[in-house]
Amino acid sequence: MDFSISGKNIDEMRNKMKITKETIDYVANLVKLSLTEKEKVQFTKDLNSILNYMDTMNEINTDNIKPLTHVLPLKNRFRHDIDDNSNDRDQLLSNAPSQINGSFQVPKTVV
Amino acid sequence: MKEITSMTALDLGGHIKAKNISVTEAVKAQIEIIKKREPLFNSYITVLEEEAYSQAEEVQKRIDDGELSWSPLAGVPMAVKDNICTKNIKTTSASKMLANYVPTYDATVVSKLKEAGAIIIGKTNMDEFAMGSSSETSYFGPTKNPWNEKHVPGGSSGGSAAAVAGEEAFYSLGTDTGGSIRQPAAYCGITGIKPTYGTVSRYGLIAYASSLDTIGTLGRNVSDCVASLEIISGHDPLDGSSVEKSSYSYTKSLIDDVKGMKIGIPRDYMGDGLDDDIRKSTLEAIEIFRRRGAIVEECDLSYMEYAIPAYYAISCSEASSNLSRYDGVRYGYRTDEYDDIQDLYMNSRSEGLGMEVKRRLMIGGLVLSSDYYEAYYHKAIKIRRLIQESYMKAFESYDLLIGPTTPKSAPAINDSSSDSQKRKLSGMYSSSINLAGLPAVSIPCGIDKSGLPIGLQLIGNHFEENNIIRAAYTFESEMGGRIRNEKI
Image (cartoon, rainbow over all chains, first blue to last red):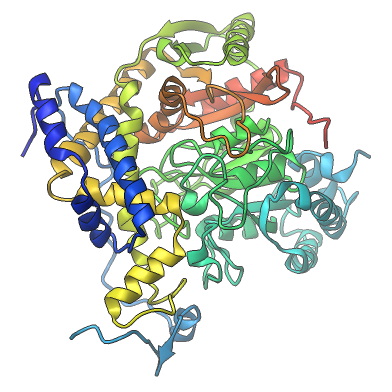
């Protein structure tokens, strides 16, 4: 799936993509943040502004450009599927906000 | 003998080896200075006084037993940025979220330092989760620039830079995701190296943007930076992105000669918005290199004006993924207010994370969401390829590139004014380098009219630190060695 944007379409896209309060609520839920009204107003402004800035990337045609996900040509590094875990449960729990019977304690996850 | 804390790291290392100074004496002198200067600079989140004395005893014994004869920096007190895990020592990433987090393991770079007999004297202050360029977003208050306390030291490795510049540590580790070693080094009048991505293991580095994060060193001169970089570099099976080279001998490149080296100065780097003093300094640096026999020419790069938008899209996206682990479950801050698991996540994160971090998570969440992914994230990683290719093309003709490290010197604290031209230049100098994964060093090249330091940046091709180290070393020797801060 690729996106070719011509100059005419950038404005169309800009209007479609403008950040609204609904967008903020949607994204806040994705990143698990509960925002105050003041933060929502500020972030609506900030996200619109950064989106405008990022829109400039669409001035360049990148139809035939391969994306770069890693700066160096590395491939997957595998190791043998051997269990080399040590008996370090206490260590792993040492920063736990709440623990019970050697497990992390949290509220009910399945309702 | 010079005041201990004013020596370079290698000088001190030499004195310790020659038994002129004991490790405990060095630690004592360093702790005294830290106590005196911390109320002014706030370079540290945690000072390790007791631990340092106990490390000193251990290291002195190892030196006396002949175990550390291979290590030029054995016994030298140094500082580690607080986003790098130190076993049993609080590591906070300057965030309320990790204010009481005590790692149960050492980062690989810390293990390597300990093996080399380094004395870790403290964990330095930084922007929260390394997100920022002034160290003002730290949960533990801002760090001040030792050249002028009304100004920022830069960021995000502001504490690491201020500690070295303020003689509160002999060298330090920093991290650079979008300029965060080089810019504070420039603002604080010291040297900072960001090596090629993949050179230094990121195991134990609290992640911000995994394809951009790079650990590097800050020091009073090129030799100190290079000697410490050698200690921390090398392949690590615990970091899948670390390249398969077991060690690097950077110190071999400390050569005072640039005859015949081809140096490019990108026209884009010298555009509008560059401060006059810095422009002048950069042009003078060019003359210095020419006088020493290097060939210096203007060259062209492309797509650099898209560095910042691409950087924001990519780094914020990766951050939103990396910071999803902070959920109040296994470690870190947990809210007291929750009825169910969703509340636990939402409230722990909202109460534990600062504004700038939240802003970047929101940007990342937006850019990665289905309506925006193609136009912004996917676009950005294509632009990233174009930026990297542009640099690769330049390196076909040049051994290294040169330019300013920053468009102006350190701003005042709380000065959030931003000028779009300066921002564009910053993006070119700072983030475009991380997008391409290139090595770069910032060295002091002067003082501007307000008395603040200016940095010169040398950029090399992947794994060609030898060229930038050589050029930096030569330039430094032409400048008469390190620039001293008479104020401290």
